[in-house]
Amino acid sequence: MRLRLWLTGIGGILIMAGAGCVKSPALTPAGGVPPASAPQPLSQPVLEVKDQAVINDQVVVERVVSAASVWVAIHRMAGNQAGEAVGQLLVSAGETKTFAVPVQKSKITDELTAMLHTDRGVVGTWEFPGADAPVAGPDGKPVMVKFRIIKSPVPAGASSRDQARQVKLEAKLDAIAEAATASPAPVVIMMEAKQWEFVPAIVRVKKGARVQLKIKSVDVNHGLGLPEFNVRAQLAVGKTTTVSFTADQTGSFPFFCTVYCGEKHGEMRGMLIVEE
Ligand SMILES: [Cu+2]
Image (cartoon, rainbow, N blue to C red; front, side):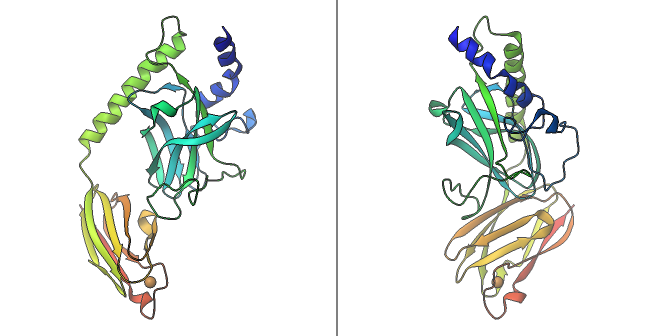
C-alpha cells in the first residue's frame, strides 16, 4: 500500500516524462516543454526516456539530439538526486532514436535519471566523475530525464498501462537487437598521426559504412577535425584514439590536424573519400 501511494505521488513528473520531449521535467514548468514534434535545432540538446522495465540489463532511450557526440548516462538515485552512473553509452552527433544503454542491474534503483554528458578528456572513454561533465541545456541546467522502473515481468494486478508499456518495450528491444544484427560491422581503419602527416592521408569508404578511425599519435599531441561529419578529436601523444562516424554522404571531405604541432602543422591534412 505504501509503495502504491509513493508511485502515485511521483506520477505527475512521470506523465511529463512519458509525454515526449523532456528536458529536466522536474525543473521546467509544464507550459515550457515543447511538444516532441517541434523541430529542434541541433544546438538544443534533446533527451527522451520513458518509464520502463529493465530487460536483459538494458535501458531503452527513445531519442537523443546533440550537436556533438555525447554520453548518455543512466544514474541511480541517491535520495531525490541523481547519484552514481550505472551505465553509459556514447552516441554520435545528430539525432539517435530508440537505442539501448547497458546498465548494472544490481545497482539500479526504483527510479533512474538519464543524463547527457560531454565527451571531453580522452575521447571515447567515460570519465565521470572527471572530464565528462553533464551537458547544460539552454537553461544552464543538466539535460536529464527522471524515469520509473516497472517491475519485470509485470506483476499480476499491475495497471494495464504498465502491462501495455512492457509489451511495447519488449517489441522495441527485439527491433534494436534485429537492427544490430542487420547492420554490418564497422569498417575499422588504423591510422597514425605524426609530424606532419596522417598515414594514410587518403581514406576511402563506401557510403553507409559505420567508420572507426583508430589513430595513434606517435610523436606529439595532434588533433583531428573532419567538419562535415562533426568529428573533432584530441589525439594525445602515445595513445590510440577511436573516432566513429557514419559515412552518410558521398564526396571528398578534407580532414586536418586541429592542434598546433610545429612548423608544418598547416600541411597536416588528408581526405576522406566516400564512394557510392
Ligand atoms: Cu598539428
